[in-house]
Structure formats: structure tokens, C-alpha cells
Image (cartoon, rainbow, N blue to C red; front, side, top):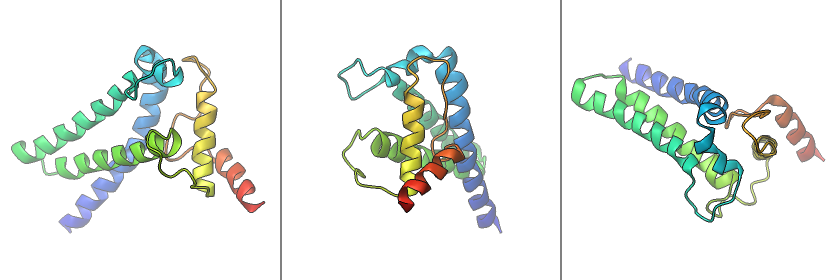
Length: 156
């Protein structure tokens, strides 16, 4: 029974992280922390590192904090929560940095409807160069209209 509870907390945390990523992206990155995020929208730098990557480090520290609470304070839910945050971070990195932005040249030929929807939603997000008037702030679950467009393309 305890294993089922841990798995449930892990999965719930992973799903909540999509909402957290959306909210952080919309209200923090495109809000009061735009100065940190804007180098991601304006590729006027020659570095692989972007100041925007600090947000990734923030969530890594939150995950590590959960592991430490579990290990040293006996907070039993710290492990599944920390793992859920970590797993979302890995998924985010794979989708956003590798699949969409091609920081590493992998998954270039992935051409299914889900991948097309993710890329299109992110492209529409990046067409807005300023902090306002943005759209499609999530990552793994973009708006349904992009899935509908992608499915129509794949069927052709």
C-alpha cells in the first residue's frame, strides 16, 4: 500500500510540475524576471549557456531540498516529491532543450503528431519577442489546437 502511495505522489508531483512550469513561465519569466528569461527569446549571444537556465537550476535545488528533507528530517514524502520534480526536469530538458531547441542534435527526425504539436506551440510562443502578448507557456501539454493541427498534418 505504501508503494502505491509513493507512486501516486510521484505521478501527481510530475503532473503538478507542468502547471508550475506554465505558471512560472507566464507570470515569473514573462513577468518580473523577464531580464533573466529574455536571452532565451533573443538569441544575441554566442554561448550555449543562457541566463534563462537559472530557472532549471532553481527547480533542481527544490528537488534536492526534498531529497534532503527525506534523508535527514524523516519527511517520507520528500523522496517521491523530489523524484517527481527531478523526472519532470529530465522530461522538460529532453523536450525543450534537446527536441525543440536542438541544443544537442538528437531527435531531429521525430515527426509524429505529438512532436509536431509541441514544436508548433513552442514556435508560436517564440514568435513573441517581448515579455507581453505571449501564448503557449506550457511544455508537455500544449493547447489542444496544436494537437488538432498536427493530427491533420500527419493524416495528409
